[in-house]
View 1 (tube, rainbow, N blue to C red):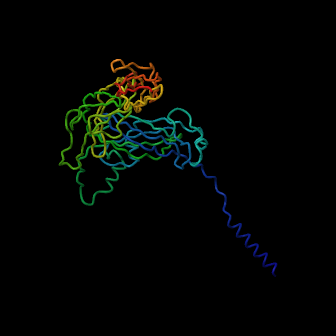
View 2 (tube, rainbow, N blue to C red):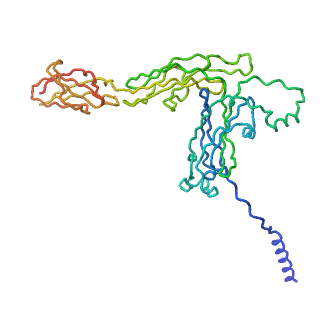
View 3 (tube, helix red, strand yellow):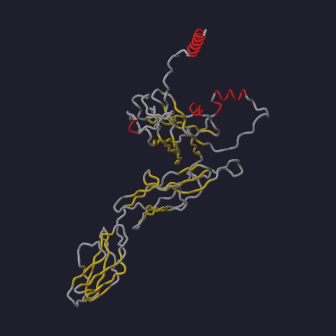
Length: 407
């Protein structure tokens, strides 16, 4: 009886185990890898153009690397209202496609925490992944014309199906149109990744540029100066919306200074001058200035001024050495003085004579030490001075005079 019960229980357990096993299904398709959104997208309006920059995707949405990306498309849309991501892609304009180096095998990826040396390097034409990309759009008449939302079939259908329960809506406030930019990574098989964050620039008319700048320098910096401009637009017409209108933009004027394409002002400056401390003797520097007008939360730059260039030449002598003192000893007079602080100092010349009018240097090459021992016969009396010399050969005026007699 006991053996039969054990057999029955064992059989039941076997049935439960067999019955609990699932049937093996078909293999799942491989996970499709798409690139993350471009990051740090910015858009800077400069007169009739907009400079857009962003960081090229370097990973996929699951965190693996390298990104399965072949290019980044940049879209723009001009509107007076908000659009969905889908509407931006359908109704907006693709203003640029930036080629990106792609992986040889999109599925041969490395986990997010793996060392960089384990990531297969993408190849082909285009930019490296993870670098900054830049594109420029010229604002043509068609580019600044707002998109009509009713051009979107889905929007027309929604408007027909959802009439306002309170009757016709009031017209929207009068606002200047803006142009919105987004970037999206495209995989090697043409699939779109997620869109970047949106950046909008105002399409209000740009300000006037400043007057042609001047550039002067001293031994510490090059100073660029220009004439300020008023609160007017580039065509001479002030188009600021009347303050009685809802949403009239608030404006303020400042300036940005450029060395070529390199912007030197971290933030726009309100004073019409800028000191560039990157002075290198004999190295040409060229500058342009743009008016930077803040309109609400965005900044519009004017066209650039004519370029002004300057090549600094070192004609500035160092300061005279200070606190020259003498110490007499047996058969010698020792001189000591305070060191100069100029960055381009070459050294010092020690001068000696019976009187100030006949002082003569004791060496032809500047010495770097701040002391000098003059070996003399006992009882010899001399007058001394020291002169500083810079690397350009400019000589300072004389230090204070000091005289002494060797013991």
